[in-house]
Image (tube, rainbow, N blue to C red; front, top):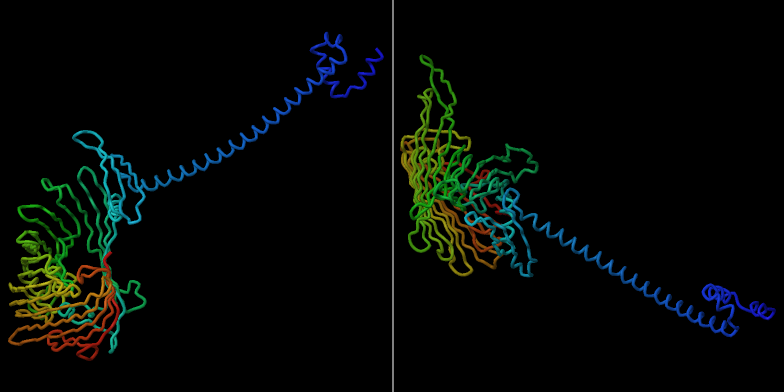
Length: 570
């Protein structure tokens, strides 16, 4: 017993724990075990404990490594989710512009990234086929430019227009424009002008479309620094068009355009002389365009163009004259049958307009004559690389009187922009032949021209304020240019005109010429159809005779002017 006690005292604490545990499981054997057996068993347990400890360390290392892998996997997953989220946002942004908000058909749009040459954009539309009552995916390919137009069409809003302006001066004070409608406007106009057109689609479904259109235009003074509503110096604005245009509402003519509002049929402008051969300004009207009938296309319009008339009436038995102002109703009907093919690249058109007064019972003493305007037009496209257009016209009464003007020759019914009906008209007639176009004389030489030969009998002269006037006139502007490249041209514009008015046995003559040297920065070779244009010019104008206009250049009969002008369509 004493020996056992000493042996137990020599045992280490760690072994005491092992012995205790061993004793719990092997108490009966422990009592009978010898010292050697006990030592052997203790050693075996120590080895197993060490093995378990090593396994625990390995498991801990594996756990740590697993946690690291899980953390890395979680980080990668978050990055992938962020990328996916950004892609989804980008897809939503791209598809939002292509959804048709007011359509019952859902359109799903997918866009490929454009290639470096800005080549292709793919769009997929889901459309409903009424006959088969099923959805058909129609895949379309667009260039980037076409895709922009597609977006514009889907939104249904567009803003476009025109303006011109610049800086100018002369060797003799303020430069003056003289007979630009007869000599040419290039180097002979010093004011500004603008047209602003706003168009918004309001309905587009089942083959029917409706657009609201507003056009604003006016003058902008380019000489005065402060021009805020400075109407006395040429800052003037007007709403020239406010109308509703529809397509798909005319039976049997799905492509025809029906419009209602303040509008008229399109103008035809002689650019170099700055007046129109076809112009019917209207207070309001209704029209149908693009009726495909026979070999050509028919346009029709019914317009209002009321005029102001001053009536002088003497009081019976006295010398007192009373002046009153009458507003006379004028209705105009206009038709054009155009795009009639003749030979290769040649088109023919016939135009007619009739203006009729509609006086009230209280206006029996008011004299307003009806008027006709008739035209035939021959246009030759691909004419030496350009085009040429010939217009032959005849007019009566107040419209014929406009053709006798030195400057603006628009075939309008009223005498001026204030809608005044002026003068006595006695059935006078006028005839006019106009040629306009451009052609390439050589690969790098282009020439544009505008020529007008006009004659008339028994018309009212708005320039002289005299009735029963006979007249003849020749107006011209010719502009040859050398094409350095697509962006540079140098040239000259030569203008000459001569007019003779005969009235009451007296002859009045008006004659002048213009020479304008210029260099132009352009974005195309065409003179008449490419804009924008920046022109640096030096212009000489001289009035040889001024019996009709009494015009002078600040005390002289000639003027040297120079400046820079820009003109742009957008």
